[in-house]
Length: 316
Image (tube, rainbow, N blue to C red; front, side, top):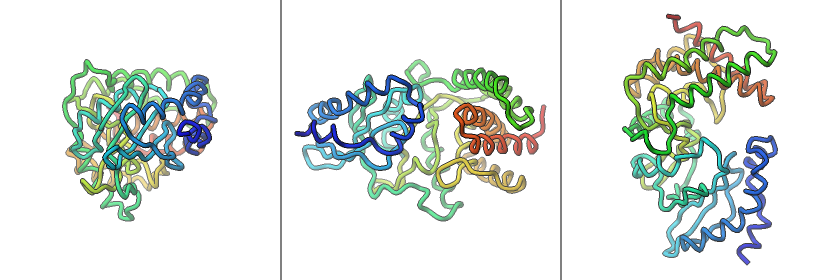
């Protein structure tokens, strides 16, 4: 009966759209076919009851409310296997619930977790005040940074940035686009050089933005959904700088970009120039990634961030 109920449940709409766009590759078909039996086994393994997935959900996983045998609320999460999901359980375990959701159980090989449930669960985007959002987010960001043994499964930022540099180089030389290449070329150089000049390496959340900060009871706000890396903390604030309402947004006038950059950097105790350089690097990579995936709107926005900061931060 339980298995049949999950067979007919539709995938969360956001995940379905990302799969249809080709994000997960051909192997996702097998993953979908095995999803009902995996959920049923998770119920038996952890002695929980798992409800219908949240809608619209995320773009890489199925997340559903769960209830333990003692009646306690929890969340079940199973993720489509991909590189960015590697180490999520280990990162949450390293946080130990300090500013982040607690991990209750995990099956590492199948990317399944049982997590603390955030209630009421509204994201930090629900706060109208940008200043208040930044205060909350930056406070949590600093709390999450901690040393971590780089011999574990979590990838180093050095390795990932080098791969991004190679892919971005190939893409900018392959595709025709309407932009001058200099900001992207500078971004590629920064992807190669910034990791080597970092003075410390910490556990990074890797996808830190208000959509991954939920209102809760144990603490008012808790961080979810790390895509962890180990490396330069100046990498982490980029999405706080560039996102609005859950997605990358057109940058404001340069003076306002600089004010926002300095404000974020001061909140987390970082050099604003270094945060700005990482923003050029990431925006260059995002622009070419988006262009490669046919999203010319986001590609243009990301390029504009790279160009704006390229003009604000002197070379050399």
